[in-house]
Amino acid sequence: MKKIGLLPLIAATYFMVSGGPYGLEEIVAGAGYTGAILVLLATPLVWSLPTALMVGELSAALPEEGGYYAWVRRALGPFWGFQEAWLSLVASVFDMAIYPTLFTLYLGRLFPALTDRPRALAVGAAMIAICALWNLRGARSVGWGALGMTAALLAPFAILSACALHAVPDGPPAPPSMAGLWGGILVAIWNYMGWDNASTIAGEVERPQRTYPLAMLATVGLVALTYVVPVAAVAHSGLDPRGWSTGGWVDVGRALGGPWLARAIAAGGVVCGIGMFNALVLSYTRVPMVLARDGLMPRVFARTLPTSEVPWVSVIVCCIAWTACLTLGFQRLIELDVLVYGLSLLLEFVALVALRLNEPMLKRPFRVPGGLVGSVLLGVPPMVLIATALWSGRHESAGRLPTLGLGSMLVIAGPMVYWIRRRLKRWREW
Image (cartoon, rainbow, N blue to C red):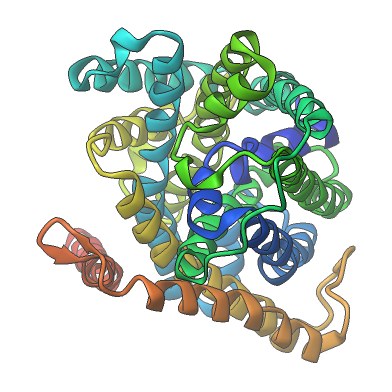
């Protein structure tokens, strides 16, 4: 099996985390240009860098298929390993429904007839099917595809930034809005979320002990750069940020460069949606496979294709589940995703510390600086950021249930599922 190298892993991680500036519009509209830039500069320092360092150490020390599940299981035992996998898979249900929505939204900018609900759902389902087939070709195919799509989606923003910097501003940028700042932080967390997703394909990466730390640190810089530069450039142009909404980059491109740039940005949004979904299919579908190998899911999920070793049953079942969630709203999806993913990330930081205590002699080609104290302090800023952002949105609701209430119910279901699974296993053994 041909494995994935450094550049394709950086590109795949970029799509697992970012996929370009698409999705930042809500931050600009809520917090203004200055507030958005502050949020986009602070979030990688408080959130991305600690997470990337943690992933770099654990991926290099334990380069196993299943990634974060394998780390938590080894550090804290099978119960907590299952909870890590459960939280990640539940988060994926909300996370993966967002990208077909972005895909159809930007495709609708090019072909407005596709924006009505039945057609939009059909287009989203078709995109999911294409990504499923693409993933069946293997990790290397997804990685090289991500490399090409990264160049395709960032090129229009490079042109947009140049046009914005040459524009004559009408006046100073509007001051940041404190009312929209906390909501902007929640969206920023989502836009910087997913650094651990690349870990689940460790068995399919060339020289993972060296490749993962380099890929994590390089991707942190790339994501921050491709977020801040376009927003700062448009701020210089003086365009009013208050009218922005999801998909607003197209209108900005039209105002600064004309219809051709608007179409290029819309096409880049289509690439963003399919690129992010495609890369995350690669990540999430390895989790049911390793759970099945450990006897915590039906064995059928462990079946792989002989040519690419892709878990084809997991790919198909996961894609069907994600298709069923296409009708959920964008903001509710983000809130639920951040809540559940934040708890899974907490377990990973705990695993980092537990392995430092329990296995001090474990070979670690890359180490988080600061020793044991450094590994403990590393997880504090991301957890504080998540708690603050979720508290600010505690009154939001998902249908008739509060968002935090629904998320809490899904989290509590994890131990129940584990207990039921263990009981069923014991009955079969009897």
